[in-house]
Image (cartoon, rainbow, N blue to C red; front, side, top):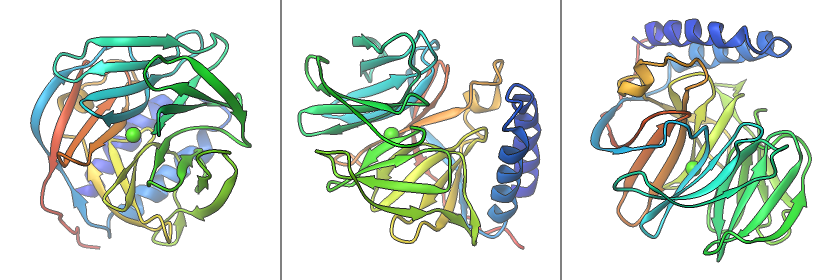
Length: 276
Ligand SMILES: [Ca+2]
Protein backbone atom coordinates (compact mmCIF):
# COMPACT_ATOMS: atom_id res chain seq x y z
CA UNK A 1 0.00 0.00 0.00
CA UNK A 2 2.65 2.44 1.04
CA UNK A 3 4.61 1.56 -2.06
CA UNK A 4 1.60 2.42 -4.24
CA UNK A 5 1.06 5.67 -2.36
CA UNK A 6 4.67 6.57 -2.73
CA UNK A 7 4.53 5.84 -6.44
CA UNK A 8 1.59 8.21 -6.76
CA UNK A 9 3.34 10.86 -4.70
CA UNK A 10 6.49 10.52 -6.70
CA UNK A 11 4.54 10.87 -9.94
CA UNK A 12 2.96 14.05 -8.66
CA UNK A 13 6.31 15.23 -7.50
CA UNK A 14 7.78 14.62 -10.93
CA UNK A 15 5.32 17.12 -12.40
CA UNK A 16 6.17 19.66 -9.76
CA UNK A 17 9.83 18.93 -10.16
CA UNK A 18 9.82 20.17 -13.73
CA UNK A 19 9.24 23.65 -12.34
CA UNK A 20 12.28 23.55 -10.14
CA UNK A 21 15.07 22.87 -12.49
CA UNK A 22 18.27 23.06 -10.52
CA UNK A 23 17.26 21.24 -7.40
CA UNK A 24 15.04 18.63 -8.95
CA UNK A 25 17.40 15.68 -8.99
CA UNK A 26 18.52 16.05 -5.40
CA UNK A 27 15.00 16.63 -4.12
CA UNK A 28 13.58 13.74 -6.10
CA UNK A 29 16.18 11.36 -4.77
CA UNK A 30 15.53 12.50 -1.24
CA UNK A 31 11.83 11.84 -1.63
CA UNK A 32 12.53 8.43 -3.12
CA UNK A 33 14.62 7.58 -0.10
CA UNK A 34 11.90 8.80 2.23
CA UNK A 35 9.30 6.67 0.51
CA UNK A 36 11.51 3.60 0.37
CA UNK A 37 12.20 3.92 4.06
CA UNK A 38 8.51 4.44 4.78
CA UNK A 39 7.90 0.82 3.87
CA UNK A 40 9.30 -0.29 7.22
CA UNK A 41 7.87 2.40 9.49
CA UNK A 42 4.35 2.53 10.94
CA UNK A 43 1.91 4.56 8.87
CA UNK A 44 -1.22 6.19 10.24
CA UNK A 45 -4.03 7.55 8.14
CA UNK A 46 -6.45 10.27 9.20
CA UNK A 47 -10.14 10.34 9.97
CA UNK A 48 -11.86 13.69 9.49
CA UNK A 49 -13.60 15.00 12.61
CA UNK A 50 -14.53 18.43 11.27
CA UNK A 51 -14.05 20.53 8.15
CA UNK A 52 -13.62 24.29 8.17
CA UNK A 53 -13.26 26.83 5.35
CA UNK A 54 -9.73 27.97 4.49
CA UNK A 55 -8.75 30.87 2.21
CA UNK A 56 -8.01 29.18 -1.14
CA UNK A 57 -5.59 32.01 -1.94
CA UNK A 58 -3.50 31.40 1.16
CA UNK A 59 -0.19 29.81 0.20
CA UNK A 60 0.15 28.30 3.68
CA UNK A 61 3.67 28.20 5.07
CA UNK A 62 3.09 28.46 8.80
CA UNK A 63 0.14 27.43 10.97
CA UNK A 64 -0.53 27.27 14.68
CA UNK A 65 -3.46 27.26 17.10
CA UNK A 66 -3.52 29.56 20.09
CA UNK A 67 -6.33 30.53 22.47
CA UNK A 68 -9.19 29.82 20.12
CA UNK A 69 -7.68 31.17 16.92
CA UNK A 70 -5.50 29.97 14.13
CA UNK A 71 -2.43 31.98 13.19
CA UNK A 72 -1.13 31.54 9.69
CA UNK A 73 1.72 32.83 7.59
CA UNK A 74 1.49 32.75 3.83
CA UNK A 75 4.20 32.78 1.21
CA UNK A 76 4.98 33.88 -2.35
CA UNK A 77 6.81 37.06 -3.21
CA UNK A 78 4.42 40.01 -3.09
CA UNK A 79 1.68 37.99 -1.40
CA UNK A 80 3.20 37.02 1.95
CA UNK A 81 1.12 37.79 5.03
CA UNK A 82 0.69 37.09 8.69
CA UNK A 83 -2.90 36.33 9.73
CA UNK A 84 -5.23 35.66 12.61
CA UNK A 85 -7.98 33.39 11.37
CA UNK A 86 -11.32 32.42 12.93
CA UNK A 87 -11.49 28.65 13.03
CA UNK A 88 -15.25 28.28 12.60
CA UNK A 89 -15.58 30.01 9.21
CA UNK A 90 -12.03 30.70 8.06
CA UNK A 91 -12.54 34.46 8.15
CA UNK A 92 -9.27 36.39 8.31
CA UNK A 93 -9.75 38.62 11.35
CA UNK A 94 -6.42 40.41 11.09
CA UNK A 95 -3.72 40.47 8.44
CA UNK A 96 -0.34 42.07 8.00
CA UNK A 97 1.63 42.13 4.78
CA UNK A 98 5.28 41.13 4.88
CA UNK A 99 7.70 43.21 2.76
CA UNK A 100 6.65 42.53 -0.85
CA UNK A 101 10.15 41.40 -1.85
CA UNK A 102 10.11 38.61 0.74
CA UNK A 103 8.70 35.09 0.78
CA UNK A 104 7.07 34.34 4.13
CA UNK A 105 7.63 30.96 5.75
CA UNK A 106 7.34 29.46 9.24
CA UNK A 107 5.45 31.00 12.15
CA UNK A 108 5.49 30.36 15.90
CA UNK A 109 4.19 32.07 19.04
CA UNK A 110 6.44 32.95 21.95
CA UNK A 111 5.10 34.90 24.94
CA UNK A 112 3.26 37.94 23.64
CA UNK A 113 4.92 37.71 20.24
CA UNK A 114 4.65 35.91 16.97
CA UNK A 115 7.93 35.06 15.29
CA UNK A 116 8.20 34.42 11.58
CA UNK A 117 10.95 33.57 9.12
CA UNK A 118 11.43 33.99 5.40
CA UNK A 119 12.49 31.49 2.77
CA UNK A 120 15.76 32.79 1.33
CA UNK A 121 16.06 36.29 2.76
CA UNK A 122 17.70 35.11 5.99
CA UNK A 123 15.57 37.58 7.91
CA UNK A 124 13.07 36.81 10.65
CA UNK A 125 10.56 39.05 12.41
CA UNK A 126 9.11 39.46 15.88
CA UNK A 127 5.53 40.72 15.83
CA UNK A 128 3.25 41.87 18.62
CA UNK A 129 0.78 39.02 19.09
CA UNK A 130 -2.21 41.34 19.46
CA UNK A 131 -1.51 44.25 17.15
CA UNK A 132 0.84 42.56 14.63
CA UNK A 133 3.12 45.60 15.03
CA UNK A 134 6.69 44.77 14.02
CA UNK A 135 8.89 44.80 17.11
CA UNK A 136 12.23 43.62 15.77
CA UNK A 137 13.97 41.69 13.05
CA UNK A 138 16.86 39.24 13.24
CA UNK A 139 19.04 37.22 10.92
CA UNK A 140 20.00 33.57 10.67
CA UNK A 141 22.03 31.36 8.37
CA UNK A 142 20.50 29.22 5.65
CA UNK A 143 16.90 29.05 4.54
CA UNK A 144 13.80 29.36 6.68
CA UNK A 145 11.06 26.75 6.18
CA UNK A 146 9.01 25.76 9.26
CA UNK A 147 8.94 27.02 12.85
CA UNK A 148 7.56 25.61 16.09
CA UNK A 149 8.52 25.54 19.78
CA UNK A 150 8.78 23.02 22.61
CA UNK A 151 8.27 25.46 25.49
CA UNK A 152 12.02 26.04 25.84
CA UNK A 153 13.39 26.56 22.37
CA UNK A 154 12.24 27.62 18.94
CA UNK A 155 12.70 24.88 16.37
CA UNK A 156 13.29 25.55 12.68
CA UNK A 157 13.33 23.35 9.61
CA UNK A 158 15.22 24.56 6.55
CA UNK A 159 14.74 21.89 3.89
CA UNK A 160 17.98 20.13 4.78
CA UNK A 161 18.17 17.15 7.17
CA UNK A 162 19.27 19.55 9.95
CA UNK A 163 16.67 20.59 12.51
CA UNK A 164 17.90 23.58 14.52
CA UNK A 165 16.93 24.71 18.03
CA UNK A 166 17.20 28.40 18.98
CA UNK A 167 17.07 30.55 22.09
CA UNK A 168 13.65 32.24 21.78
CA UNK A 169 14.93 35.63 22.95
CA UNK A 170 18.14 35.93 20.95
CA UNK A 171 17.54 33.47 18.11
CA UNK A 172 21.01 32.10 18.77
CA UNK A 173 21.32 28.44 17.88
CA UNK A 174 21.58 26.19 20.93
CA UNK A 175 21.65 22.79 19.31
CA UNK A 176 20.89 20.87 16.16
CA UNK A 177 19.93 17.34 15.25
CA UNK A 178 20.25 15.47 11.98
CA UNK A 179 16.98 13.95 10.84
CA UNK A 180 17.05 10.44 9.46
CA UNK A 181 14.72 7.86 8.01
CA UNK A 182 16.17 4.53 9.03
CA UNK A 183 19.65 5.99 8.81
CA UNK A 184 19.16 7.98 5.63
CA UNK A 185 18.80 11.78 5.59
CA UNK A 186 15.31 13.24 5.72
CA UNK A 187 15.02 16.36 3.57
CA UNK A 188 12.17 18.68 2.62
CA UNK A 189 10.79 18.79 6.17
CA UNK A 190 8.52 21.79 5.71
CA UNK A 191 5.76 23.18 7.97
CA UNK A 192 6.30 21.77 11.44
CA UNK A 193 4.49 21.36 14.76
CA UNK A 194 5.42 20.25 18.26
CA UNK A 195 2.97 17.47 19.17
CA UNK A 196 3.29 15.53 22.43
CA UNK A 197 7.07 15.52 22.51
CA UNK A 198 7.56 14.96 18.78
CA UNK A 199 8.19 17.29 15.87
CA UNK A 200 5.74 16.64 13.08
CA UNK A 201 6.43 18.05 9.64
CA UNK A 202 4.93 17.95 6.16
CA UNK A 203 7.41 16.43 3.74
CA UNK A 204 7.28 18.89 0.88
CA UNK A 205 5.79 17.56 -2.36
CA UNK A 206 4.09 14.61 -0.64
CA UNK A 207 0.95 13.92 1.36
CA UNK A 208 3.01 12.58 4.25
CA UNK A 209 3.77 14.01 7.65
CA UNK A 210 6.95 12.66 9.26
CA UNK A 211 6.96 12.21 13.04
CA UNK A 212 10.47 13.05 14.21
CA UNK A 213 12.04 12.28 17.58
CA UNK A 214 13.60 15.63 18.57
CA UNK A 215 16.35 13.98 20.59
CA UNK A 216 17.67 11.59 17.97
CA UNK A 217 16.27 13.10 14.77
CA UNK A 218 14.94 9.70 13.73
CA UNK A 219 11.59 9.44 11.97
CA UNK A 220 9.32 7.32 14.17
CA UNK A 221 6.44 6.99 11.73
CA UNK A 222 4.38 8.56 9.01
CA UNK A 223 0.95 10.15 8.79
CA UNK A 224 -0.69 9.77 5.40
CA UNK A 225 -3.02 12.62 4.41
CA UNK A 226 -3.91 11.16 1.01
CA UNK A 227 -7.51 10.46 2.00
CA UNK A 228 -8.28 14.17 2.44
CA UNK A 229 -10.25 15.54 -0.53
CA UNK A 230 -7.91 18.49 -1.04
CA UNK A 231 -4.90 16.17 -1.06
CA UNK A 232 -6.52 13.91 -3.63
CA UNK A 233 -7.56 16.73 -5.99
CA UNK A 234 -4.80 19.18 -6.74
CA UNK A 235 -5.58 21.35 -9.75
CA UNK A 236 -2.46 23.38 -8.96
CA UNK A 237 0.74 21.32 -8.58
CA UNK A 238 1.93 23.71 -5.87
CA UNK A 239 -1.16 23.02 -3.76
CA UNK A 240 0.51 20.46 -1.57
CA UNK A 241 -0.32 19.50 1.99
CA UNK A 242 1.34 22.03 4.29
CA UNK A 243 0.23 23.27 7.67
CA UNK A 244 -0.16 21.46 10.97
CA UNK A 245 -1.59 23.09 14.11
CA UNK A 246 -2.04 21.32 17.43
CA UNK A 247 -4.45 22.46 20.13
CA UNK A 248 -2.74 20.92 23.14
CA UNK A 249 -5.54 21.77 25.59
CA UNK A 250 -8.24 20.25 23.43
CA UNK A 251 -5.94 17.59 21.95
CA UNK A 252 -7.04 18.56 18.46
CA UNK A 253 -4.99 18.24 15.29
CA UNK A 254 -5.63 20.61 12.36
CA UNK A 255 -4.12 20.21 8.91
CA UNK A 256 -4.41 22.09 5.64
CA UNK A 257 -2.40 22.80 2.51
CA UNK A 258 -1.20 25.54 0.22
CA UNK A 259 -4.20 27.04 -1.58
CA UNK A 260 -6.52 24.45 -0.04
CA UNK A 261 -10.14 25.62 0.35
CA UNK A 262 -10.51 23.54 3.52
CA UNK A 263 -8.83 23.01 6.86
CA UNK A 264 -9.43 19.67 8.55
CA UNK A 265 -9.56 18.60 12.16
CA UNK A 266 -8.35 15.02 12.04
CA UNK A 267 -7.90 12.03 14.28
CA UNK A 268 -5.14 9.54 13.54
CA UNK A 269 -6.16 6.02 12.63
CA UNK A 270 -4.47 2.95 14.09
CA UNK A 271 -0.93 2.45 12.79
CA UNK A 272 -0.22 -0.17 10.21
CA UNK A 273 3.23 -1.55 9.75
CA UNK A 274 3.72 -2.55 6.12
CA UNK A 275 5.62 -5.73 5.39
CA UNK A 276 9.16 -5.21 4.23
CA1 LIG B 1 2.67 24.45 12.70
